[in-house]
Image (tube, rainbow, N blue to C red; front, top):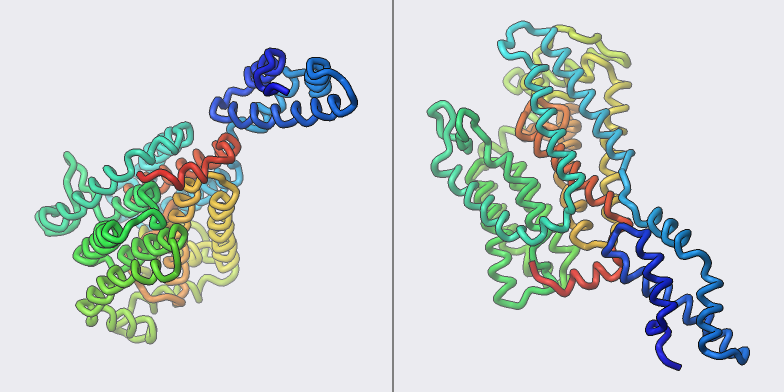
Length: 439
């Protein structure tokens, strides 16, 4: 029996089906599936004593109308919108806007219109979100190594040349705008890391180089910048990705030694600062430790339904940034804080679900690393405001005033939407093929 695939009627049937499916990368898999069904049916007819030609034609007839099959295939493999993630993002943005409105009407000392600036950042972030949604995220993978190197160079330059208003910082001026490179770097650096050669494909010498370059060097740069929390976030992201792509537990243990040693060295040099934070955390009511104490007083005074919109800002420091959660609870109450906490958990669970349903390992790695980033930056400020975790400088995404963060965070959500959009457009052999490639 000659190959059924060589039969002109079979080829014509498969061409008519694939003509209806606009996702071209699925055509080979659809053809393989159709061919398997036709071969099975043709063999059954031949076992009944029919000729090969009759068996093939009858098998094709039983498959049904190729146009209808193609339309059903198109529905199965068309782009998808993650409306749940988008609705949760919209809720976060509305809460952030309401927070800025409340602060602006409660305190007339702000010379800048917070709402106009917030909407300006929202416009840029929304444009990037739409752009990334329609972008094929897989095309970013080829640039991963270049982006990683570029961000590392920017970080190094910011530690040497960075300044803002003649003060040495990690800001680099781009025209009239100062960009905090350390804040800017985290999401692009981790996304680039997701597209680079996985740990299970490293040789011995390559493992040493990769650990030093991808693990130790960024930890050192974040440490030099003085950002303890960003050092933690990057290191945990690096370790999580390494764990997912490791050859063995032994290899993972070897890889973790140097980055953890770099973190330990950094923490030793910051002992005084860490002890101060610890004392504040253990004694928030101490008159010298006003930060957490004021947060606790404001939350205690909130009650279930809060003090109301636009109330005078209590002595909560940094209400536009790190302490936006205590201020929101003060204005709108414990019940509102509970709802926000549930929204945060649902948001993180939704990202996790994206990482589990996708076939593409690159997409899985991006989603996993963004869980690390958003998990830290949403949960830590919330728990910090409640006095459960020590004070750090970390403004929550979507809710705070920070422009660079809001733009990057919305772009990251756009990338997640792009990943979800293509979840049914990835051939089943994608993951296996990707594991054989090195970025």
